[in-house]
Image (cartoon, rainbow, N blue to C red; front, top):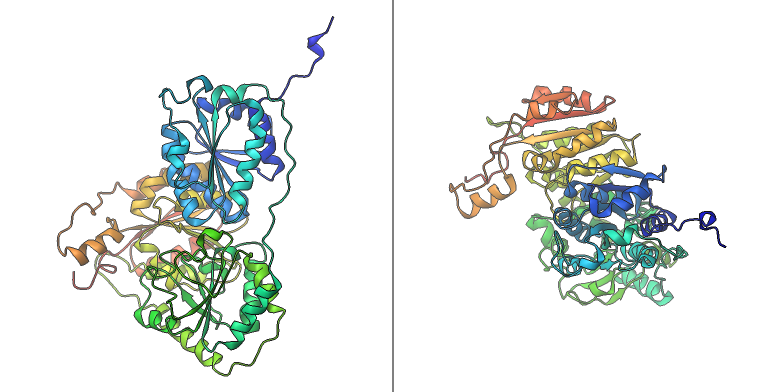
Amino acid sequence: MNDDSQTPSLPTAAQRLLETLIQRGADRAFCVPGESYIALLDAIHEEPKFDLVTCRHEGGAGFMAVADARLTGRPGIALVSRGPGACNASIAVHTAEQDAVPMILIIGQVEGRDLRRNAFQEIDYKSMFGGIAKWVGEIKHPDEAPELAARAWTMATSGVPGPVILSAPEDVLAAPCRAPIPPWHSNAIAGVAAEEASRIAALINGSKQPILLAGREFDVPGGREALLRFAEDWALPVAVSFRRQDIFPNDHPLYVGDLGLKNPEAQRQAFSEADLILAIGTRLSDITTQGYSWPTAQQTLVHSCADPRFLGWQFPAALATTAAAVPLIEAVNAHERAANPTLSAWASRLRDLHVTDSGSNPQDYPDGLDFVRVANLIEQVAPADAIVTLDAGTFAAPFYRKVRWRLGQRLIAPISGAMGFGVPAAVAASMRHPDRTIICMVGDGGVMMSGNEMAVGLARGLPIKIVISENNSYGSIRIHQERDHPGRVSGTDLANPDLAQWAASFGAPLVAVNEVADLEKLATALLAPGPIVALVKTSLKAVLPKTA
């Protein structure tokens, strides 16, 4: 007679799923709890080294996962419940796709027997996320859990990184799993063909006015340093893709600006005169290409991107490759460099245009501070290893053009333009790097969307610095409104609560900045230990069209 009491119990599918992720390097997840994945919450309870961060909204949890991934290079993990939870988290999925960030969204699903029967809170996630996620999987049997978890990790990190969805029915998560954890092998990096490196070197040597457009793929360990060496060795002027200012030191003589929103016409004209564009490690999205208008058909283009879907699609290239950015430039660096007597003057011209554009001349306004003053202050006081998270909004514009980001500093901003990103991103950054200065810049619109996540950071004693720009307006939209429909304000005014009392209710010291003289106390607070919330009365007139 068998004694079943001596037979070890099998792990649940939830336990195997978690073990698979941990084996690959996962150490944290951000969640809003739900009964649909309660077995996974129970599995996490048995893993004391795995940090579960309980958030106040699924959108905030998702944004934290995106920011965490930006800082680690590993997939950020968010756990949400079915239906409403998944819908709330969808903004972060879109952000991860636009930002090319690895993310795994695990959604507790209805029980397996109820799938596709329009059960309570059921959504078909393949239909819902198919257009923005790299992959959508659903665990239909407990033994599939480790395999699909492994596949989710690989899909999120391979090629151009991005978000993946893993749907996990409630009863399947709780069921025993007999399948082992799949072995883990790191993703293969696309190699560099010798003829590619040789051809690129020849194109550089034969050009008179080249530009190196550096993209996301340099945001990897050692990537920034490799980019700097390459640019200096070849004396190449460097522009960065949309909102990637922190991958190249902005005070370097070879830094010639970013390809972003509203580039000055003089700069656009000069860039159109380049005879060679080295677009390395970028997808060449619409903003980076100035509305798909640059590079032009008359310019020679070298384009590298890890995902071949983005090669040769909008812009024909003399050479297109999926080779990873860092190995590619290192292979090119092995070739001899020819003398180029015109290059120094070309780089200086582009640099001068950028310096002219990046100069700041803040004005005095009766309705509040010109927020450029705050951006200038952040540049002055931010430590060499500071992490600055930006929400979306007009207040953030000076941080892309007026602030000179130094090597070692990190700028974490939503490429997607998602409002509500800043505060959750700061919380995640401070959890990942509690020893570094974390500064969040957010407007009064964005802070009311996700500022509740301040509670998560302060409950953990994180020393985050949150600076709120208050101008009682959805400023970015108001600018467009005044240009297209001057004097006809509709839907862009904000009636704020008393933000000073609201911010103070979280228990962080409050700094009120109402005039220029108050900037000194803001500087002191930003350098002091512990958290602060600064409320800046910001001028709306400073950003509105001058004819308004």
